[in-house]
Length: 350
Image 1 (spheres, rainbow, N blue to C red):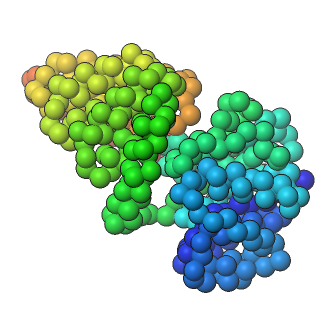
Image 2: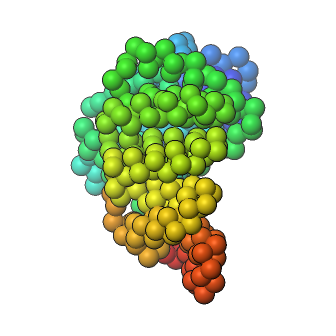
């Protein structure tokens, strides 16, 4: 079994080394796809990967899917049975995972690895030749459900922290790519979601609400449609439109009734607009669907999580709402439970 790492890179001499170091000891080859290197990136890669380094050139066309699919094909061409993706700003941490055993026992075509903060999992390992293809110019998607997937239990990936300026450039790039892409693909909800994400990152909240609402209205994937309403509600909160945010949360629950964060945000928005009794009921609904005292861990989800909202968040709102209603004893109990829930999440004891 030959495992090949794939890394797309332009000029990234300062960070590519650590990306490759995170995988070089347990892969058979490190494939670096040069999309326009003008600095010492390839020299750094050679220093780290040595004889394992394989370089292929792919001129950048503002299309991440085209580059990803090229990398999959190139990994197969160098003899790979599996490939694992690690971008220059990412690091793979096995954390005791026996990666070879996982691949040897896998009957699926794709294996996911969760982000270190637990918010989502991402397609990382691909059986070669790939039985499916990436699609989309940015925030590219891979139809893992079509070929079967599992998520590794222990391994995690981490991303380097971006500066505000790096985020701004990223959001501007994505918005510039996705605005025409959504016009060309008006029935595909995914691209409206990520257009909303980019607009939100740029502080263009009204436009982001429109994009997220369009994503949800297209009713593609229940979890995505519900989370689009959650993101729309976040933007509405940023605009001070608290009642509209509550309505967006309710609409999101109509898309997927198991998303506890929608109830939490509904509670927060209700509290901010002074509807304290409603904030209590929204909080209790979130608790019932959450992970500390509810059924949240039984809800099948791929990504789109707010861990704090799944654990301590509803108790945080509840303590303030109850105090506003004159229930001091209930507020104190909510405060204690808030600390316990937060401790369970942070300490991993939940």
